[in-house]
Length: 389
Ligand SMILES: *Cc1c(COP(=O)(O)O)cnc(C)c1O
Image 1 (cartoon, rainbow, N blue to C red):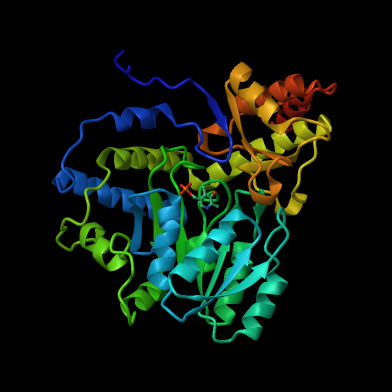
Image 2: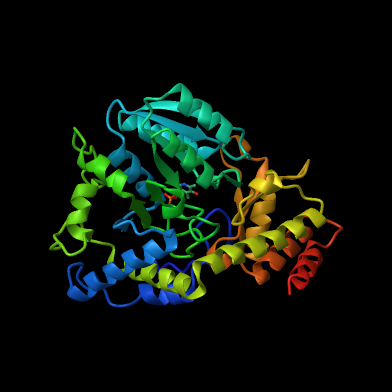
């Protein structure tokens, strides 16, 4: 029997990513593939860079998408900026901080770890103590929006501290970009990476990154070559650099870049601040509904992410069975817990176009039904929406 074409089921994606993709983006993906050095394509690449500068709120010339998912953006930042022997302070308050540590070690760096409880923001006081105690540290690395726990750290404050102690900063903004306030230039972030499949509501597979002038200078003055050939920014710039003659480095994922271009045009049309506000509005409505049904959020209110809501699984409830019921009966995907939170929490994403009133109300109704709860969370969320008008 011949294998047939694959037609995925239609789901509503309310997990930690990927999020639902705008139909306009799916349409952009299906446009004709052209050469990756075609003048029309190169013009589109310049627009992608300009739109990414808008999304990151930066004028950094070195702003572009890496041709691979968020993890590759992470690797690009660490492999280019960390030289063997560099001392790097890394904050760990969830899964992605641990991956940063792994990246630093593989680049030959020495790590100073600042640990915080999962579900809490990075503590700036501890970071300042580490900066004081290790005056020879050259980089501070932390995750802005920890998708594994739902906690948002104060990136502005952490970057200011790093500058006071002459450290560059590497910031993971995979989940934060477009979902909550992020100002790369105003906050003085030196290297930042994100992903396309979270709050940009694009397909997975690209990682927008941006490097400050100070970061570019550190890369230019490296004593050793960047260990990764594919992610060496000096080489990538031969293809993505402005003005310079474009040369072949790797075949760009042409159609996926059309998709990112479309996602960024949608973001520009909505307005970046408006996108932050929209994520916050739906987060507040969802939270009102969850709390009305007696479900508890793990993260204290002041440190919560808009785009990822981490809920304590009630005593005696079968985690996998509930998620499976949501998927099969309601075509609704929510996320499981990761690492030490596995089996203890659910992660409800409100990312990109998944952050809308219909999704919030449907998710609350579905949870009420599968958990057999008494109180009506959707009614509470609806009351919240009405109070905002
Ligand atoms: C999703 C995520 C990543 C990894 O991105 P991929 O696209 O899955 O490689 C890194 N950091 C954070 C905070 C994330 O949420």
